[in-house]
Length: 169
Length: 283
Image (tube, rainbow over all chains, first blue to last red):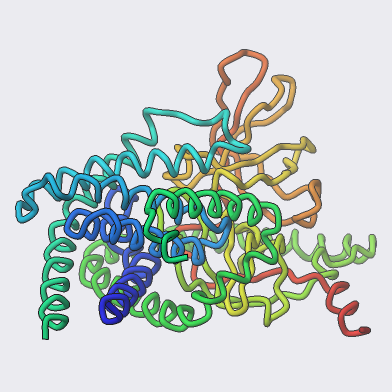
């Protein structure tokens, strides 16, 4: 358990650094993938809703600390992203990569809409649009996320296999 | 206590309520709540610095090979434009001398006399795709306060500090939708300049709700007007590149190209108020 926490924390730390620095240089169509969200999705699909919720919460909290405007915003979204996907975990054939690609697409779209809505809810509520953000931000990001989710899922599965093997000893 | 953690939905409700409260508290007291971010921002700053540095070098390395051909063509074009510019330059130098004389005559004080300039490097970007916020490597230890204006070495407006941690601070760019700057066109009209989701992809800001009688045209230069109290007067914002009619015929809106290339910034300057510093020294 302790090992798992350390491994997850380390992964989140690395992803955060990549997300805020290197990814800026691999932007396609002005959009970068949201690796933190992909990590939450992969963990909750492969490990269930409790682990998904805890991972989602702490990943979101880390993002809150770094984006530095409102604490609790991403934590809340991450928590519910983890719970909602984790709840379907038992009904899935989890070794199929198409499953993870599909759910990443769906959840990325839902998640980014939530971020857009909640963030522009206050002062700029009159400027909320539907077509432009969908075509120019959300869809490209969701596709990009879906692509990266294949590799991230492979990593999460391998990591958990190793952690399970270590715990059995 | 053990039973409490057994009941998952109860834990969920409690955590949710706490988070919603936190959101409320942190949006009201962003100064103090920003300190929570220190837990993570202090250890991550040096790593981010290193990664941004490496990323930039990799990009520059790739571009070096990609651009050789284009550079040759560009070189020829540039040589021609240099000739043109040289002759223009001579005229401008004359104008500048005249300007200096006139300024001395008026005894105008420097615009930024009330401020110290603090240099900073950009170390990281916002993790998401929605906000135009970036991270600088100076923070409260360097005396940076929230809402300080941020400019470039060429005195173009970049944005303002939106949150301060111990060793880093965040800048809200003028392209962001939450940014509002009161500007002043060279013809003497006041404009409300803000970021827009659609135009910021092309690197532009907009000024909307311009009454139809206001005289504004392509090529007008915009400066900060000093209204709103955040930005001092006279920082260059940009140039009007397009004026359009808004939905109703009573208003127009203008597309403004910032005088700063906000996509490729590396170094910026923060205007730190001198009076605050002097006050703290007295204590």
